[in-house]
Amino acid sequence: MTTSVESGDTAQPGESQLSLGTAAARQLATTTKTVPQMQGISSRWLLRVLPWVQVSAGTYRVNRRLTYTVGDGRVEFISTGTEVRVIPPELGELPLLRGFDDGAALEALADGFVQREYAAGDTLVEAGAPADHVFLIAHGKLNQTGPGKYGDETVLRVLADGDHFGEQVLLEPDGTWEFTVRAVTRCTVLALPRQTFQELSERSASLRTHIAEFASRTIPAQNKRGEADIAVASGHTGEPRIPGTFADYELSPREYELSVAQSVLRVHTRVADLFNDPMSQVEQQLRLTVEALRERQEHEIVNNREFGLLHNADLGQRIHTRTGPPTPDDLDELLSRRRKTQYLLAHPRTIAAFGRECSSRGLYPQSIEVLGSAVRSWRGVPLLPCNKIPVSESGTSSILAMRTGEENQGVVGLHQTGIPDEYQPSLNVRFMGINEQAVTSYLVSAYYSAAILVPDALGVLEDVEIGRA
Figure 1 (cartoon, rainbow, N blue to C red):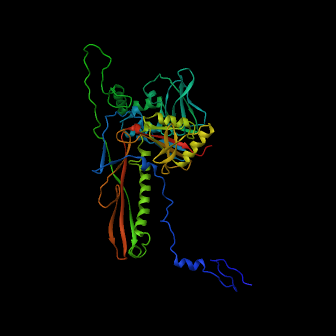
Figure 2 (cartoon, rainbow, N blue to C red):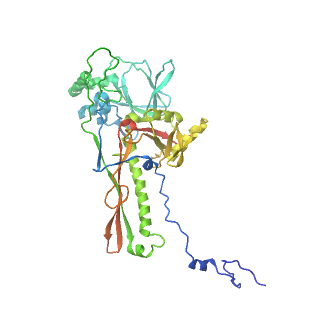
Figure 3 (cartoon, rainbow, N blue to C red):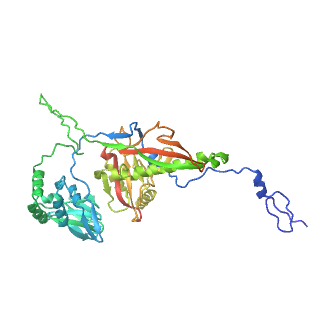
């Protein structure tokens, strides 16, 4: 009796093989294969939706109307263990001390701040109470509340790390608080008593002179955005004198130089000569290198300290979540800060956290089509995933809201096409030669940057907690 052996199986000892096995058959067959795959490729939505402006000169200048600086920046601190101290020059972010550069006086002022700790729910100041301290927030989140139109309490502002309030008490000896400030989370703040400030000013002639100049300073006419005002007459009759005016410009506008991401691709000549069928080894190596450069390009446009969106968003366009997780209320607040918001970008985990908040409220955001793909949206604005937005170790991230295009005074990408040996727009591949080991080298370079044309083109929802249910 003969035992049948299926085609392709290896015969057992003592058995005869009746057909050709697969191991031998593969020697005559052509394997169907894919091009090399790469896990590091993302959707790169930011690069896809940004309008790209040709920068022929390599530098892009953003001309704006003259804006008066009012000292609404954030204060930075240093910490040693549990002790926190304000960096003395950072006190120049307070309107009263803007432009004051006496280092010794600033050191004395920094030493005058007293560290205080508050638990969630504690009240720092109460409306109607005497205002006698300046507060700097080193860590934590607070709500500044006041009476609404109909007598109920409403949140006027959310304060967090680097914010400050109460600087007006330094010039108003008999002032009272017009709002209440309560801690939402555990907070560390630095407080400067008005009496301490007065004692320091009595000892420092430069500080007294600066305060006197500040008090007598005439504030130039400006609009609500801080720009030099354009005088316009309206609603008049007869022949009144029409005011003359002009639109003043910044004398030192910001300029953006194109940044670069580069890599040297090396391929041995033996590999390029002998192993090119059915796929070109050089082309596949180059394709993967270009993908890595594009990923780095998007990362830099988000995170670069010189031109990255997260670091260059205007301080007035940065807001904090009211409770921690990204709620529909927070995104509504973010959208309200600018006209014609076109895109929201967030880390995929942040989008998932927003989805949980919507589900808990019985809300189901619609999907809309962007560039042929269906994406989640809020209020008709697409919410695009961007894994280049960092997530901190504590589980917080950010959400970007932006308007794009030069015609909209929005955010634009910068590049230069037509460069030598161009392989893709603003990306070239240049042959560098063959070394003594017969290795061919190619320099792969991508040139890019990004610019925010006006401050309200970009907004950031900061400290979004994505781990809370």
